[in-house]
Image (cartoon, rainbow, N blue to C red; front, side, top):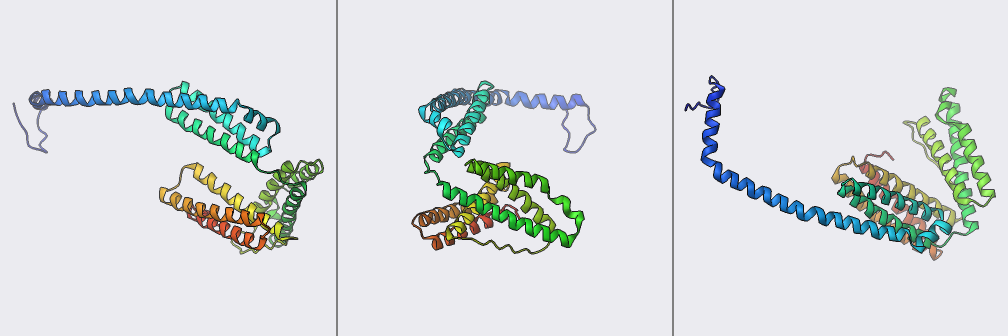
Length: 311
């Protein structure tokens, strides 16, 4: 048998094979034994883990199915508020996905979705137990959003006169008008949630257009409030919008772990301040409640900037 120094390549493939075979013969017994033991351990772990995971997912799915078929779920579906009904529907969709993934053998995905389904159902129950807002407060909230939209539209019209008609395409005024009309009709029928949803859509469109037309400019918005309660609701809505934006970014799964951890900490601090603000507002102490809510908004803004959002 011939041996060749490292880097020397003038030898035949048969010589190389002979070297390899010689080496394998020396260590075949111990190597094969080690491999056999390793594979046996892996098979044992897999045999123990897979059935346990499957059984756990199956039990969790059965548990969630019982919840979604309960009287509580039926009550939410029939008489619950819109937020609770949406969460209940989300729970059912997630459970259906988990069941399908279980049948396909995708255990980890099934486990994730059944846990999310259970969380959605729990949130639906909590949302349904919240005291319903009075018609007067709902009407005030809808009116406040409409006033914001009118102010933003006025700013957009002014900017358009400065920039020229070529920028008019930034905003679909007809669609915004349709949304405002839909909101008015819903409000007249007492459907305040539907009215609020249409108004929020319109506001997002107008604000987006205003940001684009005022690109690279510093814009200061002033919103006048009739009562401290109006101002508190405005700050509360800002907090909720920023929270939703942050969650969308987290759901994308494309963020650095370090940034996510910092954002989560700031979000946690913001939620604490938000809960303090709600407690103060419940006691009628709106000045302190507004201050706390503004601090909560600032925490979220700091977090969103860490995630790359320009605010």
